Image (cartoon, rainbow, N blue to C red; front, side):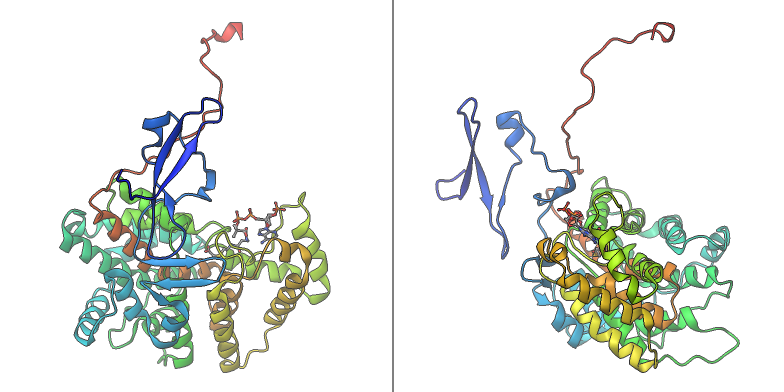
Length: 432
Ligand code: CMC
């Protein structure tokens, strides 16, 4: 450790022994205390269940300031990206680090577009699922199953193969998500249309039928494009950390992304958008809001206001602010007077005035509004988390690629505080 290096000294109050730990600065945001040498020097591990104070990696992709409600990808504010850019460009940015020039953009768009078809045998794979399977269950299986179809891009140490896998995952995720929807409603799969942009193609694969001509509504396509950008990446959240941990064992990228999908499914994470609408349906009408607010505040009741609160954002969720605007646009375009939206607005108003929510800094998160737009577009609630997974695949793949390209890559292996029985002798069953 050099004399000029910033350090942090940790002292054992019992023995008086102390250890100097290096402090590392990022570009912006809190610095970290590098504890990698802690066990070797003190015989102690750190203890941080749920990782509320742990930086698990270095990353150049996404920055969040939870206090200020800031989300940036590669240095660009999410509000600017949503307003000025599109899915394909932001996907390129996350994956490659910079915005593409015109040629790079066209090449990338062409590559993703021409990878959207899935191996025909994948159709048979889908048919093995029950029709009433949750589409997230289908996605966990189907995406993991891609590793059985694309053997030529599984060598994670080959840069070109990593790139091909990344392109395949981004391109095929939309097709698989649409297939999961079609399968659940008993309609034929719709093949991708390479003349369309990513969002329009996805809507067409979800909502067209071979018997009829389908025109993509440009306002809905734009809203879908924005929803995808807003969900693309979110730093080291639970599913991204899952993808990184799976990837650290050198598992193939399709298997890693399947592990991310599994994690995202949970109601505390991506599953919340489905739960928001189910909650609104359960509340039913505005008169019952106070009853549910009381339930959410009652520590003996497991009920939580779904779509409220966030581990990192403690002021507002910038994604929710942007999405609220698009929710209004979509509902206006479709001429929908949505009672659930009105209920949601009233719930938000009452919760934001309640000291319980104010003191705990609980604000509506992205999931509070996304479900309302997706419902208006015609998606069943069971598809909401699939759409989240579709967008987040870009982030997962970018984070996975960044990790594999890190020279110091080692398998992730947290330790623990063991609180089970100390050593004891085996007693024969007759004597217990
Ligand atoms: N309703 C009622 N109380 C809540 C809620 C809620 N939605 N969220 C947090 N709290 C309370 C919690 O009971 C605790 O109170 P106390 O300090 O009295 O014990 C306090 O607020 C802090 O909560 P926490 O559970 O320690 O916070 P966390 O950072 O561990 O959890 C969360 C974050 C998102 C899991 C949680 O807020 C939650 O369960 N929200 C509802 C589910 C949801 O909307 N999830 C989507 C997250 S955004 C999309 C994504 O990125 O995945």
